[in-house]
Length: 207
Ligand SMILES: CC(C)(COP(=O)(O)OP(=O)(O)OC[C@H]1O[C@@H](n2cnc3c(N)ncnc32)[C@H](O)[C@@H]1OP(=O)(O)O)[C@@H](O)C(=O)NCCC(=O)NCCS
Image (cartoon, rainbow, N blue to C red; front, side):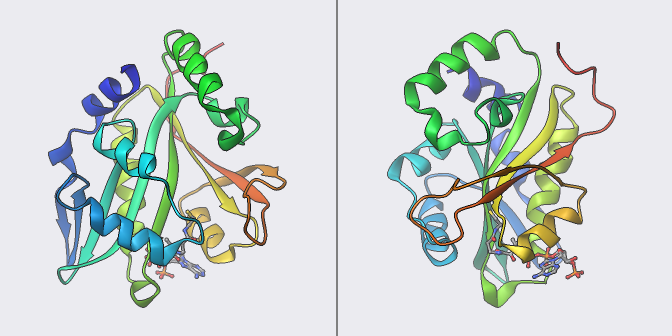
């Protein structure tokens, strides 16, 4: 699979075993993925499918876990995808549908040199917030993305009502690029913003 091959080249698993102060970041693999499932069930109102976790293990997406004093307290999951993928689907990845997505990957990724990182989830247990753990997780992704000249930007959706996440991301220079009405399903406050961080000193935007 092309995406996972590119991704593995950019994010080799051992790369994420970093340690700063009492926070450690760990690449997600078979041995710790259950920790991600436990965290996600505490952090998010939606239940992620088995495929969500399988994609991390098979390289379709990637993830980091954060520990604080040997306790799993936060995680980030993202994927590498074609540049402008989020905008091209009007910011509504879920409704793109599997076949449309596969066609898009096949037809477009080969033609584009450029990529974007899409952040699927980022969360820290409420007991451990404001300790810099979210910062450590997003910093790691931003810094590694900057090392690859083909990655033009980092994008994500966030509930428009989620003021703490908006404040968090704006710290790093993320800007609102779009409001997507009713992006989320089956939860209150379904509207989402697409937030974008353009990575500087990149090559020219593809035509
Ligand atoms: C958003 C989230 C990941 C931040 O994690 P965190 O570990 O608490 O963030 P940090 O401690 O690294 O904060 C870094 C900076 O972001 C800003 N920030 C973080 N939380 C904030 C809040 N609630 N209000 C205002 N600013 C905030 C602050 O500037 C903070 O620096 P400071 O503490 O020195 O002032 C966390 O609040 C969370 O898990 N929320 C629930 C899940 C979620 O909404 N995820 C995002 C959408 S996927």
